[in-house]
Image (cartoon, rainbow, N blue to C red; front, side):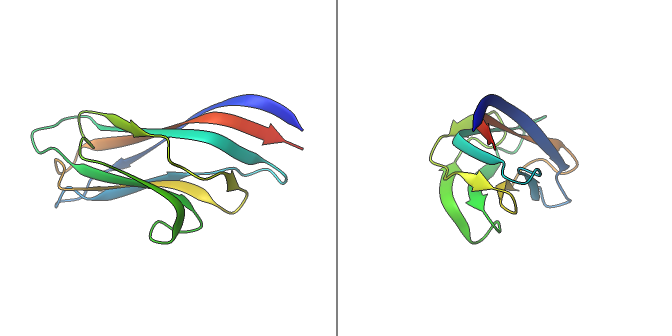
Length: 113
């Protein structure tokens, strides 16, 4: 397998209650993401969002999970399981500033068959 650096992002605009979910994952057959760190932030932090990050098949049934109390000003977690095609990394924000853009950035290693 070839090992390549991974640095990908996904964004979501938080709804009227400051809630939103962004997700991203591998798309190519045989691709595996490992050694993952997820960083989160929101464009503003009048209301400091709480963000929970999952890796797996669904945001509520993730394989790995990391929580941050600094979902707006920026924080990261490295407690994520590897992700294969069909799985994703999810960031779920609550209590942030309505209408603002939230960003999930995932770094690690992409293994390609």
